[in-house]
Length: 453
Image 1 (cartoon, helix red, strand yellow):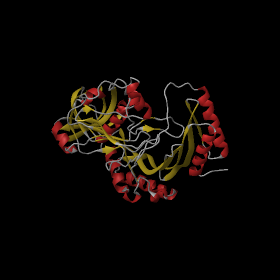
Image 2 (image 1 turned 60 degrees about the vertical axis):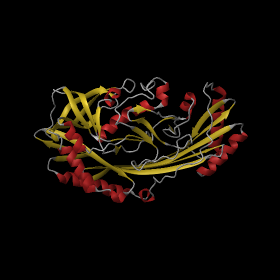
Image 3 (image 1 turned 30 degrees about the vertical axis):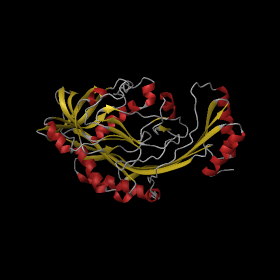
Image 4 (image 1 turned 90 degrees about the horizontal axis):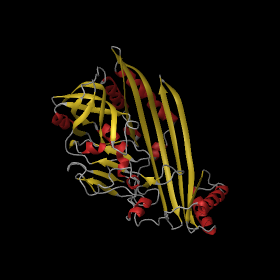
C-alpha cells in the first residue's frame, strides 16, 4: 500500500511507539528538477527528475537509531523501524540526542510560485533558444555560446515527531544561464551571466543577453599587471563567492572541532567598526526564506559580527547542547539521507552607503576584481589562506580602465577582513543552494597582494 506523506508519517510514528521507541521523528522530502540545454540553435539535452525519500530516527534503549527509505509503503515502515532498532542496539554514542518539541511560533513565508511550477518544456526551450540567438547577434566578436541552460527546481519538506510537532515548507526557483565565447586578434575570452527568480514574466531576455555579451567582450585586450600591493575593489559577486568559501568558520561545529580560528575570538574585534555580518532566515534582501531548520527549530535573524566585533556563531541543537546554549536554528540536512550539520540561511555582509562608482573613486588606482577562480582548491578554510586567480580591470583615476587577466590574489581571509577600507551599497546574493544564500556588497580593500608579471 502506497501512502500519502501525511498519512505515512502519522502511521509510522504510531507504529514506532508500539515498537518501543520512546521518542521518534520523521523527515520527508520530495523535489522536482527540469533542465534544458541549448547548443547551436537546438535543444541539445533535456532532463527531468524527481527525488523523494523519508528518514526516521527514534530513541530506544538509551540510544538514537536512524534509517531512511525512498517509498512510502508498509514495507518501508517495517524496514525503517527494524533498521533504527538495530542501530540503537549497536550504537554507543556518548552524546545524548533528543527530539525537539517545537517553538511557540513559526513565521510564514511565501517562496513557492504555482505559476512557475506550471512551466513546461516548451517554455524552457523557447527561453533558451531566444537567449542564445540574441547573444550571437549582439556582437560580431561573439563566435559561440558554449553553454545555455534553463533549469527549474522545487523542493518540499515535512517534519513530524512524537511530541506533536508538524511542519512543512515548499520553495521553487527558475535559473537561466549562458556562457559565451569571443575572439579578436587571436585572443579568445569567455564570459557569462545568469538570472534567477520566481516571476517568469520579469525575466528580460534582452537584458540578460546584453549582460552576457558585455561580460565576454569586455575581457578582450586583457593582460597582466606587475606584481605588488594594490588597492582592490572586490566586485559584489566575487566578494560573495569569497565569503561563501569561508562562511563555515562561523559554524559552532567547526569551532568546537578546532577547524575555525574564531574559537577564542568571541566578543573581540575581528574587522573594522563599519563592518557587520548577519545571518537572517527571512529578509526582503534575499529570495531565500526559511521558517524552520531540519530539526524543527524556528529560524532566527541574528548578527554574527557587529561593528567589527564577533558576537555570535551558528548552532544546531547538538552544538548548542555542547556549548550550554540554545540552537540558532541553523541545523540543516543536505537531504533526507544526510545527517544534520550546521549551515547558514542568508549570511551576508551588511551593505554600506557608497555605490560602486564611489568605491572606485576612493580607491583612486588599483584593480577592480570581477571574478575569482579556484575557490575550492586554492583556499584553506582552517588557516584562512587563499591563492586565487582573478580577472578584472585596472582602476585609473577612480575609473575602470583596461581589462586584466593572468593575475593571482593571495592573502588570508582573517587578515583580509581588517584590510577592508569601505563597504559598498550594492548587496548581492548568490543563487540559493544547500548552504543557503550568501551575500555581499562590493568591498574596497587596501594592500592586497597581487602576483602578475
